[in-house]
Image (cartoon, rainbow, N blue to C red; front, side):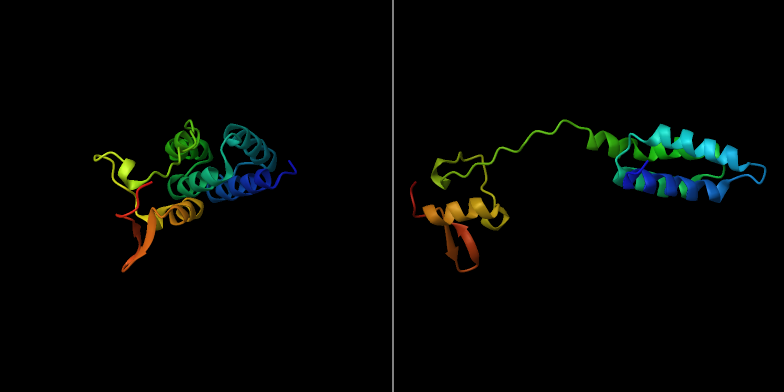
Length: 139
């Protein structure tokens, strides 16, 4: 447990437990609860875990409710985090080669490298209102 995310996760769980810990809970029971809670939530990335614990603190009034509340609060974010990620397909084409149904992105929204290529090729020019697609250049 020397990793910083683990230390932060346990500290946040401990603080959450402190808010709702029954007076009859012994130090050993609290340590056991922390171990079990951490084991149940250790699969969460730290940024998602933080949000889940903050949410659980707002609603939980008993230690037994903390872990289920964190799981419920992080379900959507974890699903988004674990989605298959495909790299975007980047392309820069001459405006004339684009289909009529395919709008051009504004040149200012392009990555610097694509913007530079467009400027070098003459596809993007400096207009009266900033960068714009050239209407005269055929590529």
